[in-house]
Amino acid sequence: MFTYVIVANASQARILSAKNNTMSLTEISNLIHSASRLREQELVTNRPGSGNNPGGYRGHSMGHEQDAHQRQGALFAHQLSDEIDKLVQGNKPCKIYLIAAPAFLGQLRAALSKPTVSLVVHEITKDLVTHSVEDIRSHLPEYRQH
Image (cartoon, rainbow, N blue to C red; front, top):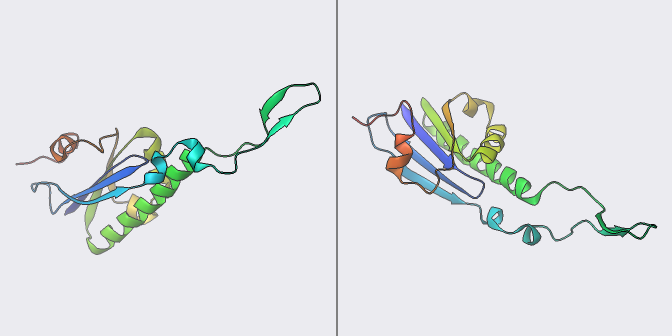
């Protein structure tokens, strides 16, 4: 059974695969979402205005917009979900392990299609995107090299 290991955070995702549990993992894709790495002020060009109240106090915000980094993370989660959908369509049966930073895991889970969600066998809430393939493998509970 084909295995995919998705290792991600809000700005980078690595997709690893193996034909079965006894084969070594191979990195097949490395996606970078550079907008998630920008500072807030670089992401938001039309920030809410400041208002003055008649009492002389200044500087309060005139709007409550969603955090730009959260929007960028959600956008990247949808892009990653599309990539995963393309992979699993051609390789069934398969199973998926998700390893993601805590805040991003929720966004990714929400973006996955129902057929893809049914293939997820385990989730790990850690940011391991910069770790070696061997270290990533060591975090997988049912994936042992023989």
